Amino acid sequence: MWKTIGRAAAAACLLFSSEADAEERPACDGTITRATVVPCALSASLDVRAERAAAVALEGRRTASGVLLPSNPVLALSGGTRSIPTTSATNWYVTLSQEIEIAGQRGSRVRAADAALAAQEKRVLLGKRDAASLAWSSFFEALAAREQLRLAERLLATSERMGTVARARAEKGVAAALDADLADAATFRLLQNKLAAERSVATANARLALVIGREPSAAGVAVEGALTPLLGLDARPEAADLSRRPEVQAAHADESAASSRAEELRRSRVPNPTVSAFAQNDGFSERVFGLGVAIPIPLPAPVGRTYAGEIAEADALSRRATIARSRVERELRLELAEARATYTAHRLAVEAMTPERLARAGESLRELEVEIEAGRLGVRDALLAQQTLIELLQANIAERRALCLASVELARALGLPLEGGLR
Image (cartoon, one colour):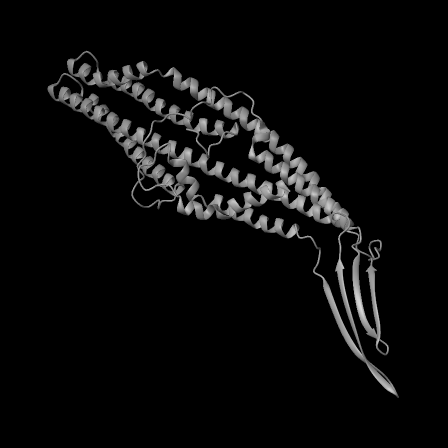
């Protein structure tokens, strides 16, 4: 009883959740932060709404399965006239009959519907987790693109100053004209990087706008936050409890629904009796009252209907659901191992690029201009050093971006609630 009430309450929540989302939609028109990106994405996700609608549809199936009677009562009325040469009489007949299930078919139907509804509830959760994962990935992509653009602008400005110094030295005759040309080529290459970074920013902002329900072609989305991974993943155990994953829970529920369906079909082979009560005015005003029972006669296939084919199909689908659950568990274990390895590799790479090392690289990049102007460093050597330092700074952003995306995948593989308060 309590389980049934719980299912009904859950379905009621799902039924009104779309209206609640519309009324409680977070403010997603301003700057998107780590605190708002997931709520905005969940409220805008069409996949989540579709899964909720499917859950409401299954609740309708659950309601239909819980009906006590397999069919409505049948009231039959008939009348006629009986006559002989000397007299006549009006005869009438009234029969009320009701089919009754005696083999527990209703319970099997309810269990199958409950399992299907439980599976769909997990798919709603899985849809939310997918939407949250996409939101985090899009948010980190936007942050990384913004940082890449800032770095490209800073590098371009530095390269332009170096080119100016190299051109001035060439005009004074203290450096070859080739050095100035090489500096101009390096500046042009950095200009291309800046234009590519601007395109990446526009693309990432459009993708993020679509995820949170804005128009991608409208003004860019303002994002705010640090390009740092999700917190608390290093303290998580190496192995995760797969039974908590909504994919596994949905597979278990599908397996239960398939087996319940097979059980229902087996119980349907038991004939349903029909009990009846009748009253009639027969003969010449003779009153007759009585009770009756009708029992269908099951005939063997292929003459009669024994549900043999349906039972075989349901058993095969139940075995298929069991295999599908095992396959899901196997894939999730592999997903966790790959996500853990990827996250660890990018974390070590980011840790190797210490703030002190990055600060020295930035300072050395700025000092190249001074070294060239003072004549302590040749332009060609400076350009080679510049390229190495630029690659280091760009690799830092690329590794931090990869670490953030890997943290999302690891959190997903660990079964953490990305749709909740994970930051």
